[in-house]
Image (cartoon, rainbow, N blue to C red):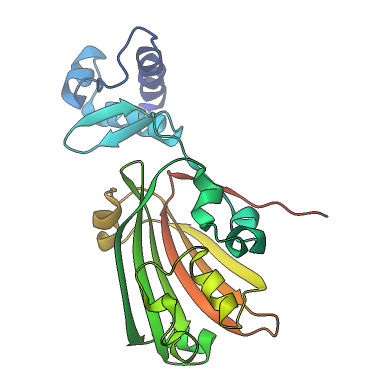
Amino acid sequence: MADGPKYREIAARLREVLKDPKRDPATPLDPERVLAETYNAAPTTVRKAISLLRAEGLVDVVHGSGVYLRAWKPILRDANARLSAQQWGEGKAIWESDLGDRLVTLASVAVQYEQAPEHIAHLLGTEDVLVRRRLYVVDKRPVQIAVSYLPAEIVRGSQIERRDPGPGGIYKRLAELGYAPESFVEDVRARTPSPDEQQTLRITAGHPVAEIVRRARTADGRTVEVNEMVLDGEAYIMQWSFTS
C-alpha cells in the first residue's frame, strides 16, 4: 500500500515519544488531528500507525480519552495450573493461579434455574439447568464474561445456588456432592465481539476476544458443567503445558 512506509515511519516516531523516560505515562498522545498535522499525514495514516502500536501491545486506546502507553499487565492464564484439583481442592479460587496478589472483582453475578439452550442440553444430558452468569474485573478492567451451566438434579439445594459458592468454588462443591471433576476439555477460538460483548467489556468492534467453552467431566465421563467464556483477547496470555 502507498501509505505503508509512512504509517510505519509515524509508528516508529511515536514509539520514541512513548518510551521517553522523561514523559509522564499518564499523558495521552496528541489527538489524531494534531498528529496528522505534526507528521504531515492523512488522519487515516495516523490511525494505521496507532493500530500498529496497539497490535504490538504498546498502547491502549481509551475512547473519549486518548491513546496511552500500556501500563496494564496481561493475565497469564495457565490452563493446567488453574484447573488442577490441587488448586480448587484446597479451597483456592482458580483465579489465584492467574493473578497471585492482583485484585479480581465479580462486577456482576446472577444465579437462576433455566431451560438450557439446545447445545447445552445436549452436552449435559438435561434441559433443567442452573445458570451462573458472571462478569470479572481485574485492576478495574472488565476482562471476562462467563456463563456456567450445571445439571439441576445435581446442584439443587446446594451452595452452588449461592452467589458465592464458598472456598474452592463450584468444583469443590461438586466434589463434595460426589461429582468431582476429573478432566476438562476447553475449545478456544478467536473472533470479534458482539455488540453486547463490546458494551460489557468496554471494547471496540475490531477488538479481539477469545471464546472458550469448557466442559468439566467426572471420572465416569459425565459432563457436570459447561462454561462459556468470552475473554478480552488483549488482556490475556494463554498458556498450556504438556509433555510429549
